[in-house]
Length: 212
Image (cartoon, rainbow, N blue to C red):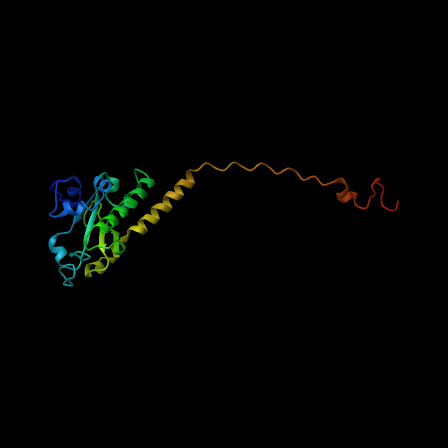
């Protein structure tokens, strides 16, 4: 959270950096979400060039006319990137965090001017493709996507896809830890009535062979 290396999202998370105008935008998060998350903005020049197809800006500009980043105030290593979610605190916590991030982002869009909750795209950049080693969920207005969005499509992981994988892993883990079902009791032996046994067929009720 210091200056070297400079990590904008970690600094915003602890309040070391307060971006212009973002106090008002963070007020669009509800109280519970503000206690856990911070909404961050891109560089003003990157926002201004969101439509640019010039080589110097494709891949550097904002991916949309409205492009924000939602980060967490919890700076434990497990939460620095979606790749490591669930490796330490558990998969249930990982699922809960992603569900909460989604709800917070959609709530922000619902309360903010110019956004539509129904037209929000939520993306992670997995470690190895992330430009900053600190969690940041890309919150995009998909009605106004720019050239950088297409250029970065190879590393834009949908939040719902990440959530689906973690839910599958949690389900598998839960099933593996469940106590084994008790063995079913053996079925009682089936007793064949004496008269129906093969060696009694063809006898009378007196036990004599028919016709004797």
